[in-house]
Length: 237
Image (cartoon, rainbow, N blue to C red):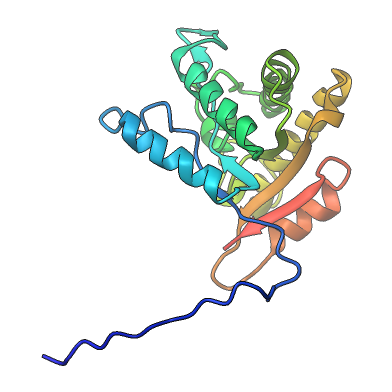
């Protein structure tokens, strides 16, 4: 076994190496006050440790998963247990000065077009998209206008929408999910404008997954087709 050598390091933090660094941001899902899974719930000690880290690192932006949890027993309940847990997390982010990027639903198929159990689903894709737009506007009303969470600055319009949406017919099969995303983005933008809430949030999208070959086709397509509805473009690999 080789001998372990001790090395002393000196940290020089008097000089800024990266002048353009604007602070830390990251994916930080709002499960601090609710169960991530039925059998996985933070203890009070774990919760405090996590929140203390967020505060000490001076997190700038937190992007969090958010789906249709307010739909309970066939109706919308914005004061249900899951929403109360979200409000507690938003309270802390507001206290720490953390801006929030709320994912306005996640799966374009499971939350909008393909899952008949979803409250947004309709056999007519255009109606389903309108349902989505109405839900997005209501989210802004409930969270920002009514409850005052003005640190929600961004709505991410779905995630990896190029995962396939097989309920839409299209002349070109590879554009099915593209057209589905266009319907959703335009519906969200339109309804927010109709309800006088568009100025409260920036819409981010398409948040497409770029394949291993690096083909940015969907990102480019959305930039050309939906530029009047999207404020900030996003993709990942």
